[in-house]
Image 1 (tube, one colour):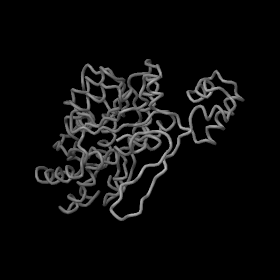
Image 2: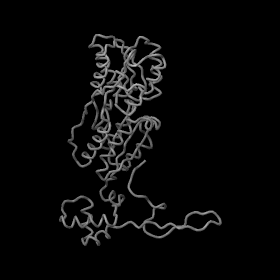
Image 3: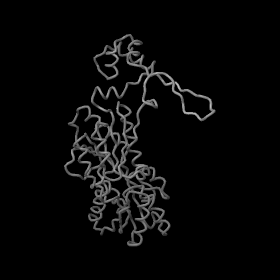
Image 4: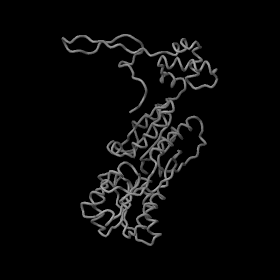
Length: 366
């Protein structure tokens, strides 16, 4: 779906006139008057300047006298003038659109507040530019129709979130368009920029909290092990336990979902009943796992301490307020968009990897 200003006429025509609406027999005839969009010429006439001057102001050129620029902006405001995106794209050979590619199914995308935070950050930054955002949800690896769309000039650049190490078709996208990943891709040969947090360090912080509380039988419920973020969080969990001289408990894949978290918690208590601490690698999985543990008779944090990851709204909706590692998801989205806009403006020297900080947020669960 594409967010874009304005509403296109039903049959794609411009200009005034009326059109008859479909009506049932005997119903009174109704007509609709099409809105006549103000033109560049109308703005120029009202401002008392040339059409070329208006064009320069609209396109942000500094080569306009301040008084003339002020007159043009006032005329634009009075007339409600909106630049014709199609004409500007044709002239500039740019679409002024950015694709957000999410290699996940629709249910996962709309059911995880992490994605909402990322989109909020991207949109916040794009609001300050002429670019619009095109959302493209691909069940697993982008291919076929989506690749043809991206190759056809419909967008100028791509941001990618929630990618898997098997999504090798992303390499093709990186060869066609500037691309920014939210999180390390885990793919080789991809020319891209990356915005991430230190997931290993975040997991170390989470697991150390459990060790410091006196937990000795510590498991983890991880994300899909086809995702680099999940692998990094398992690495941080395991290295912390080994440093503390503790034997790591089981790693159970909870699929970064509520249902997966509940399933993983049931499996955990079956195969590792002595568990007294668990690092759950997303708050969404924790919201599924915690009710299962409580139902099985575990008190939190008395019998089992829990630390999550994200500090999303799910953290405070849990039965027991969740101690969790905060990653700045909105800021990540904003930074991803900012990098891509800079690259599209010609600054390809922007550093390739940006790492944002995490921090522990203490609540009752640990």
